Image 1 (cartoon, each protein chain N blue to C red):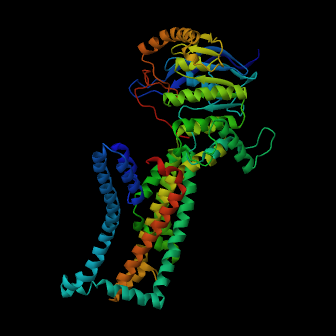
Image 2 (image 1 turned 90 degrees about the horizontal axis):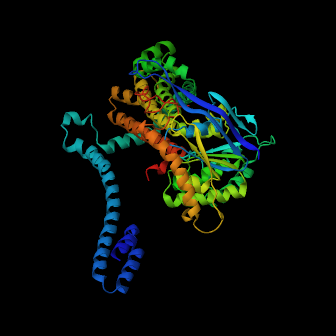
Image 3 (image 1 turned 90 degrees about the vertical axis):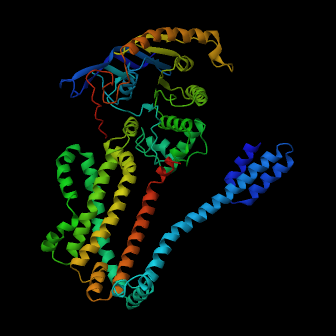
Length: 299
Length: 307
């Protein structure tokens, strides 16, 4: 089977600006270290790893929001040079534009020229937005502003926005982590339904082992920082599409335990080292060089 | 039972229909009727309290104004010494003077002169402030060069520069429009910069991941998210422009509300002076009301954050 996404020996280091207390020397933080990973076309891959293992960094590389220090990120055999319409990102905090209605949020990706060089009219965009809002179960919510929607509904809009410009790859960064348990379960099911209906390649980051095993065809386990690929678990659960609660089948429990065991040591390692989330500017609060709260520059 | 009743009855506010249905439910219920009845009477009291509260709050608001107007009307007659009474004419005299000035068309003339100056100055300030603010916020280096200078200018009281503008531009319209523009420029500029700088970085990331280029990013994400902050600046600028204009007109002008006030004072037409002051207050209120409405319109999407 062909690889949709390939990571070849990818490393990502951040130069951390020196804090005043550490004496003024810049240090480097290795978030990801020589990582190799292939994602098959149309596959649902979930990615788990302890805090600070570079999951989000990896997703940024795939999205083209940052470039690797060494190694290659290939999509369809072509190196990633920046964000592109073939990939879409769904963020944990929804990242909806609050001044736009649900419909306008969904259609923002359609406002430029399409792949055929044609610009969609306002009506065509609205129609497409309605179509995708319907797909995520939000028909009739076109004119609502984000502040009028619940967390689960916001994330549905965000998913619709990502799907609307028809990317091949959906990159999801802990998209359901901020939702309550019931909404999360519901959205997990819907996501599987959408995945089956659209055949997208999905890379899904999570810190929930249950979620990883439930959603993924394969679960990639990252090591504690610096992030390396520790193992890939093929999730084999018979009768996945059945109506019964697969989370309580022996096969699910077995797979879950497998991932848990793999992850457990890494989580303890990360905890002992006091690893924390890597901030967008590449520093991590637990690293010695960053006693200062790093300045975050907007724009 | 009682809990659900209070729940249904409470949002009814002053409407009796909802209360009647609630009472109907009480009679159909047998045993907990007394408890429920107690809660219904509580709800009635609550509803009455709510209506009374609303009426009361309006009354309270009006009370302040009414008391002030009454003091203005009767204070000079009964409280002030005869020597100060001349300088504090009662309200009806001021209103009569205002009516005369209105009939003669002079108040409209002065108002038009003041309005045209402040609108011109304010317009220049908004256009210059917003565009320069966007530039400064977008190019970080420009910000570090200009910021100390802007701090210096901003902290120089606009009126302190009036003599300079008068020397350079004469006592005509130019100097007044310029000083209004100067005073209104800084709130707009600083709020524009702040608005652009406080854009949620997550939204910028999301926009980038959607493949928006720099220009589109600016147009579709940064600008709209800065609009409410920019409008706060514009509202402050509106207040500042009237404030400074009146003062400028008092110093050297042949028309305008500031001139009317100062001229009436020196001609000992005290009721006319108060008529001018009253017009200035109403103008300020009007401008603020208009700008608040505009601000609200442009930040609709932000309104329900606290709700």
